Length: 209
Image 1 (cartoon, rainbow, N blue to C red):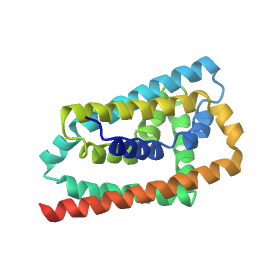
Image 2 (image 1 turned 135 degrees about the vertical axis):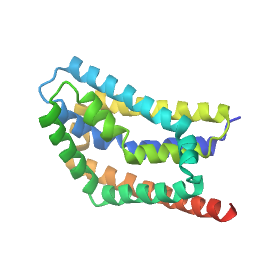
Image 3 (image 1 turned 60 degrees about the vertical axis):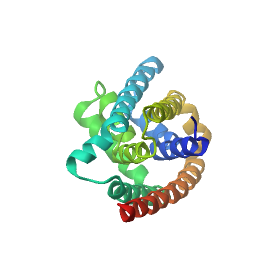
């Protein structure tokens, strides 16, 4: 049983949160000096690690919340506010600056060998925003079949991100500074609207329990 609107909403939320076009230039800066094959290996490993992290939260995130005594309504409100803050950063160019600083610091500390794990998989791909969005979405996919659909959505989102990283050099050259700025702001507005919807749904859920 497929709810197309729900699946499209989930895919849109994850893609906007992951922000593949925005991550592409950061990936290039992290992999300076690497060959195309080495970049491909870093992109593959980072995307796979991030997928398993998000999949774990999709499957067990609600159980963890239950153990902590946190209702899904409360988490939707908190997660929605967090996503709204990310949207705010995207619209006003704060998120890209923070990602660049994270990438620079990690390159100095761990150098090139571990960048697929840190900071690529964590926190640039599977960061707080993506994890929050995944747990929030999991609340809308309660059954085993629906949860499998969510995992497929996560896989598709990660595949899109992986492809963006593989062609990062071309994407960055194609978009340019103006293109990246326009796309980031547009995605920020979409994410802000989705974040507000999460808060509204959370308030409704909290009031009915």
